[in-house]
Length: 321
Figure 1 (cartoon, rainbow, N blue to C red):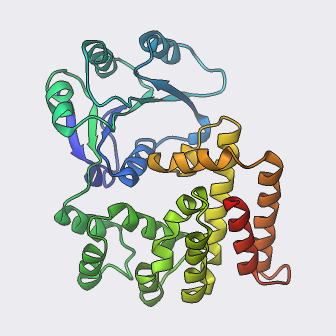
Figure 2 (cartoon, rainbow, N blue to C red; figure 1 turned 30 degrees about the horizontal axis):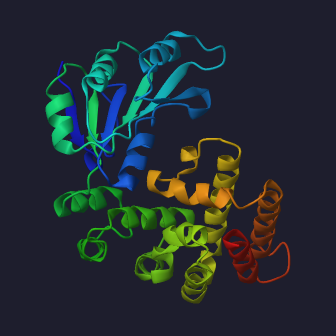
């Protein structure tokens, strides 16, 4: 059988998968993150045992066999996440790739090879080995591909030719930011064109995904400027900030406890920011901030009196300290 290369943006539109082996490559991190989740779209994540391996480990092949051949008492299926950070291949790595591609299994194998070039992957892996793996190209999509993606992904109230062209021009070279703002529409439960277009044009909302970077670098001025911009442009964006802060504080807690944070929707290139913050914040402070965000949520919903915006700024300042 032949391995199949496919652009990530087309892979995300597929309702079914023809394989259980997925190789992800390319430098558009949001596409990589979404594609990885799409690989598991038909699975019950609660019943899926997750295993993480490093392809460069000397004992990789025996660890892979051990992971796939041992039965679990509690999980019906396994998902093995394999990563490789090297930017070139050698004979040993090629042998390991061959083993993965030819492996007979019903379990799911997701391999991230983000540091290898597209040319290397096509020549050394796709063409060199026979198998039934899917190679997902997570490189930045072309304008025509973005157009097709928006036509199938935008909610009906936004799905107009004029809006699609605006998005293509507005997010040129920033596809991850476009995906980020599409997620915001879902989080805020927006259902009309006028409000949605404010999200896309609002500089504060568009910069919210950089908030954790500013906090990590202790740049309180820029971090608070994002909060203030969101407050001025859309006071209802408190709901979005509550979601962001809850996710980010939990991610910091996970890192402190040595847990994997990718399940929280953290992109690969963002992990460094959470690791940096975790070195300077205590478990006691983390739990205190979780309680403070719960209070913010109650103020936003009217259960408690007070302005949630001031509390949001306090949490951001504490995280940036």
